Image (tube, rainbow, N blue to C red; front, side, top):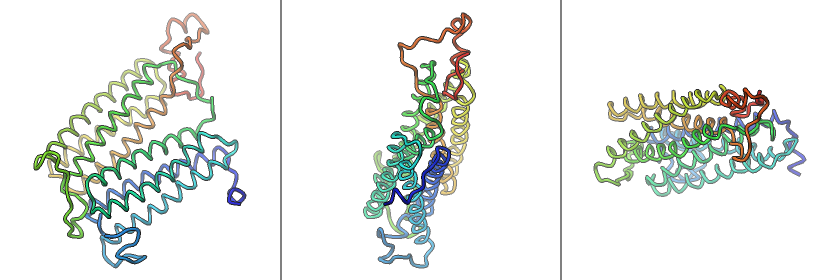
Length: 334
């Protein structure tokens, strides 16, 4: 019955659905960070209700927390739409259906984890896991939005295996950078309960030195990531990668440079909440840019696949021809 009520979608229409879901999932990261950094993490001390009622009391921090919950509901609707409408896309594609279903499952997981986070009084491990799960959901969301743009076989595999794997190697480094960033926040002064007067446990891996230790570890790894991104960008340029492959890597490099500046400012100013929010928001955007870079780099051709030899010049100068198929933008080797 439900399938009969849902409209059939063209590939272009479903692409828009996937992109809206991606935008919503990024937005909820921004607002979730705002809840914590305004000290409103326990603005509603119970879940799913707020102070035992359906609506929150007329109190600022309660409405900030409750507003984020309401927005989470809208994000959930966008995720459900991406999952359900994948089955109504014509022609039907199994890969989009699998990725689409992961989004509402991820949002449900976030809601459950959010409930435990409130129940356990914003314990650092739960808060860090909450952000980490958001980053995992974004992997599926970016993959869905990217794959919805192309039909199977439209993007040929890349012959530049070195370039593809160099871009892919940035992703785990980015994940480690984000992990230490969440550790630094969990050890810092913005535990999420200051607005409501709640005392929240902080991360104490290194005792009183935990915050300083986490910030410096995060800074070192972020510096390595920044250097690696620039190195990969220069590698892609040297190997003749097309613009649609180089562009997301370049954007990632710019975002990391801005992140470095923001991080330095917040450290010098003793981590004011407003600057920390900008830092967290930029982290989410940088993660999306990294995922976009990996998607644009494409899939490497099998090692047994020979370089096309349309001419002697193509065989002698593979770099120029490799650039024509990197990212699979529909172009073919000359």
